[in-house]
Image (spheres, rainbow, N blue to C red):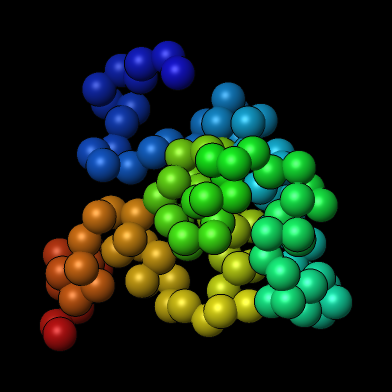
Length: 117
């Protein structure tokens, strides 16, 4: 991946740019499929088989199955789409943000969102 000028970078955050978005087609298509109840049920019944329907690479499958949100974004997952996974196993968006930042949830709330915990 090409190096970005320093002013275009956010520390500890994989940027979702055009190149990354093109690489994330499979993971985003899979996640968008979770909008449909029958696909959510298929995902719950056999996650691996559901992911195989979309041709995810082993690296993409591992990221989804371990709910490694940061890695899903690094692989091209658009947060809008991958949040659909939370329709299957509910998770707060702030927990996903904390995971992506590599922080504990309370630290994320306090340091990134200015919340008192």
